[in-house]
Length: 138
Image (cartoon, rainbow, N blue to C red; front, side, top):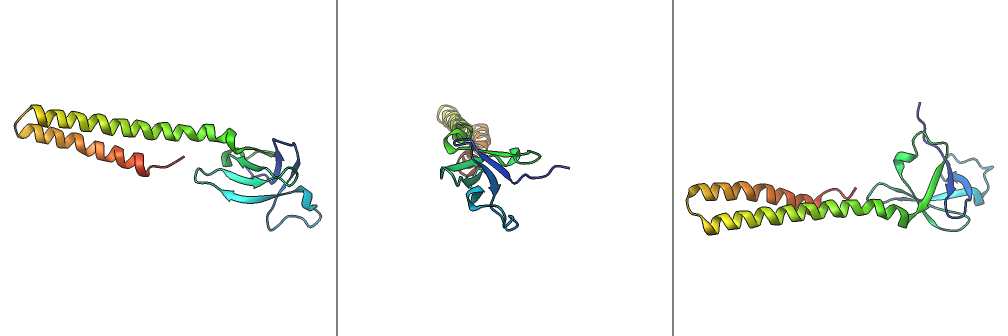
């Protein structure tokens, strides 16, 4: 059975403690309680280290089944987030290429088939642009 751990360690200062929650033991000193700051739009959990005061980031998938969470600096996690920006540029590039091909066809050829083909190119271009703008940031 996979359980979610409450033990956490700061990767910056190596301070160990427990995540703050309703059922934290009264015997746990405040210097061992990591405050929950919430989660960001990428789903990463944020905690405040009671020792050094750093904003720690934890991947929620690494919490399941782990004996102890290890909070990293937010800048270390930002490298993983940059992949989402690259995927957005792929969608923007695909949109531009499809629209250029459709414009080229309409400008250089004539006939009803050109408009059907251009329309068939504009539909996936608009979908790709929609994904680039409003797609998931994960």
